[in-house]
Length: 561
Ligand SMILES: O=C([O-])CC(=O)C(=O)O
Ligand SMILES: [Mg+2]
Image 1 (cartoon, rainbow, N blue to C red):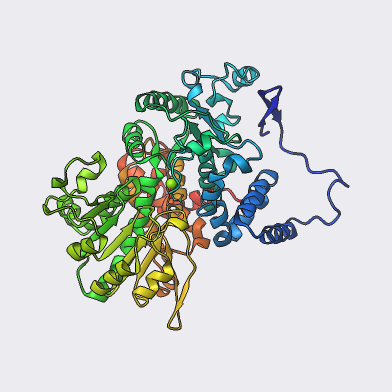
Image 2: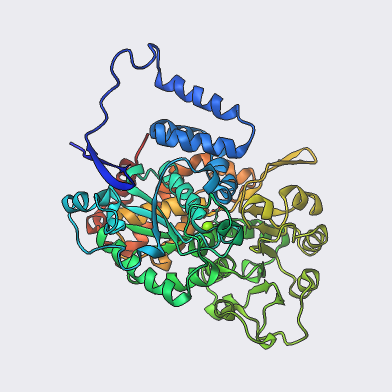
């Protein structure tokens, strides 16, 4: 029999209620003609009757608690309609307003006040129940009611939520949103997911002044204190949840790189903003570059990529795009030289002087003139075939910039990747108009399709939601001890090759989101094979399975509402 542990509160103290599976409702306690399938239509009608997206978000969040099975059925059957509500862009609004729209606990909060008592070492479920009645000494991680079932956690410290800045504990919304996509998109069981927000303070004064703010009211702790906290947290996580994968999400740039490097060979972790975004963009770029080269006649090796924005996502994507060139047989150095970075001070080059560590690798040693700050001048100098935006500067790709890209390329690749949608560097409509419909486009957040000269044109959505569910699923099923670069690359190549003939004919760079489950299963298979090749898989029984057997195994393991 499955035991269900539900946390509840009594006199300010958290306790656990132990229960078996829910009993079917007694006759007379539900309406006589309550039909599950019809109820889905009812929920959809209620959802559509709300005119504000944030209201829709609140409705769906309530539905998820009340009836997870209906919620996930809705997500799967109406993916294109539901994802922009539970995820980018509406999830951004939900995070900004999290302390105001908050209804009930969901996820695990670990704050700097828990430092020193994040875990108290190995505890059996029995002793967890016993210690939970005393909140003052309860080791916080072990309070999670489903220790044994945990497989995937999304962990944020709220310091850089999407492009919205430091949202403190309000960042919990992003962990919740990503994990809903794990369930809907890759069939991870809801009970196996743990949304986590680390509360290390916030530097956003408006929250510190807000009486409804749910986090601790202090500025962010020092780097040294944060690192001590993170070390304790990660050690506690791996002890409490031996089968858990951790996805780091929306840490500020420096910390995103720092903690990925610090833990990636010690625990199964990956950073979605660096590696997930990198993989999804590489995938779209592979498909776009082929179309672009077919139009220009230029070899694939001659692409030049200009990055506008050099934060964690920008440099993460740039690193991943190196694979595009190395897969063509170019050396690492040759690949690096096809990439140019632009940050808030313009083109990134060596003789400009002091710069952040993470930018140095791509800094140019072949330019030594005066600082080049104007994007049009930079385009004129670099002559990029592709312009990628990861700057969170709304409208940075002005009509002039789009015209310039259109003038030097028969099919310019333009990917405004900043999230959420109001921070995008340009809209799909503008990109279409200023390139006369020739643009190869992908954005981080969704844009509507455009009719141009009688033809329907579809924007790609280069969002990491195509990657992380399948990458996570593959890592979990193979019980990967670490997430290698080769596994991330496999997820990307898997996604690129999953376009159907129909999708190719429609000029799409990414598959239709409605097929996410099929795509996740395929990506998971590629990731498992890469884990096996790298020797990091601990589910060694999967090694002898043929591709068809492995595929069947993955699909059987995927949860269905
Ligand atoms: O959440 C998204 O839409 C993509 C992402 O990771 C980010 O922008 O930080
Ligand atoms: Mg993110």
